[in-house]
Image (spheres, rainbow, N blue to C red):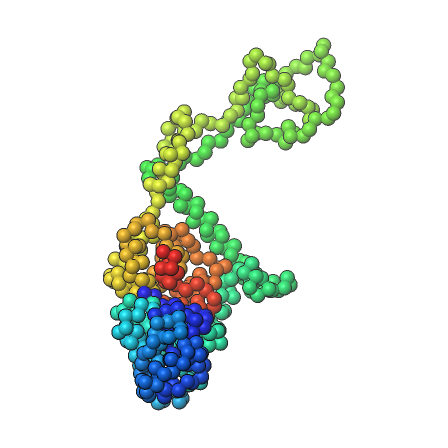
Length: 453
């Protein structure tokens, strides 16, 4: 089962077990401990007293009583003493003890607070790193839904340098519409940053149009032995025929600007006794209407578009292909969908299925659905999770997204953070999800996929 991070009150969280930041002695402490005891009722303290003292780095389990959870796991974390007293190892033992208790009692889901970061003073970035490492190692061998519940943004902190780097990357890749929406920039704030963003967006659009044109040529010409001929130019009418064709429909390609000018309201009456001699270069007063056609035998235009000769160059008068034929030709040029492409990439990597889907934060049952259904339609976050697990570069990530009908967008926070991680070789799915949580992006993996299934 996957790992996710949510904001909320752990005392209200529904899971098989929730973890309490317990006091070593059977008394009610502060923070999360006080909140859990208040919600569970006095029976929880009585059960805790029957357990007695709990050593640092260890955990014990009781019923949940009035809580939504079935069990409460009382975990005793170390206090921070500067980092030289084995605090990191003790905190890791605390997480491992709590996870083993949950597995022993066959819990399918467990919720943790960020241990030791309250009154025990553990640095939050280091505490988060230890928690994520413990969860990732445990999930490689167990099927369980693990949730890290944080009360607010201040209780969740990453490394300051990493956060600053990601913030800079987002600023350099986010489009103006999102900047105005999220940060309410004034109209006069179109400085060098904005112009750089717009230039990047225009280049992305040009690249997208070029890729689309290339794909269309591959679909229509890829399976043909000859290239499509250059379109023939319309034949120019001879000078002696111009007078004869004056009343005929005219080519759009040779349409003179004068014919689009409306004639005057009144025109002089023609002189019946005078017939002008034909001239080599016919002329007509500006705005004069064309000569009337004969009703019985309309004149056909001599300057017309050439007959369509087909893609192979052979002249043909056959009707245009039916929609069914066009669609069949397009379908023949389609590439594999998401599921076959993913399985091919896994085979190419030389790794096992289990190794890939676990590093993608994906549930085994969901991966079985993907493998058994070549037409499986994944969510975008699921595709990105596999891209991170397979350590794809940006080009391969974009290709995998295209097989599922998606694309990376600079106007999307999740896409921008994932692109940063790929560019900087950050392929730990839990670290990526921690960054996404920090910047309010969508977490990667099957957390939402399982709930929607």
